[in-house]
Image (cartoon, rainbow, N blue to C red):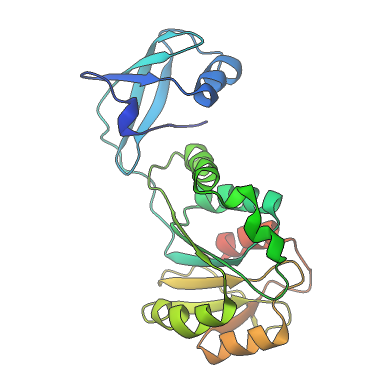
Length: 237
């Protein structure tokens, strides 16, 4: 936890912050081994970043004094990530990783090789998704919460949603065997599509290319989704 991300409910009277949730209290006690007088980086969700000093800590509450939140969060990546819904455990890690890297728009997409049972996973409950996003923000010292949308049908996504997403973005389809290598140092708004384990099926690739996406690859190695997404974002931006 490189940043304590605050919500309005954490703010007390004046410059006081009161933390009562078990996760953050446990982290302060067991990881930071915090003591009164220790300084921490604080940020308000959707706002600025500053410093705070721990005044007291027990099993039920941490109280901190809050200084001015006068630092801006790190810049977001100019990308909307469309990710075929991964296995639940991989989904959790992927959300945390891409959030830490600065992705602010994420669409989880159903494709032929996505198991239908994945959509019933508890990891897709809004509270679970938010928890993974918060962990990513805390890791990267960021305060701007990503937006996550679910697209449970491939054809409706391609026909009804994708054209609008491509109006102001350059679409990149990451898939093995595509003709072009992944570009570097992209600054333009980008739509990045990444398939599931096993990749998109040929019909899906055809439809995405027909819609205006450009096919790119990362080389001859076949990577796990979470590895591929991290490598793509690092190379592109």
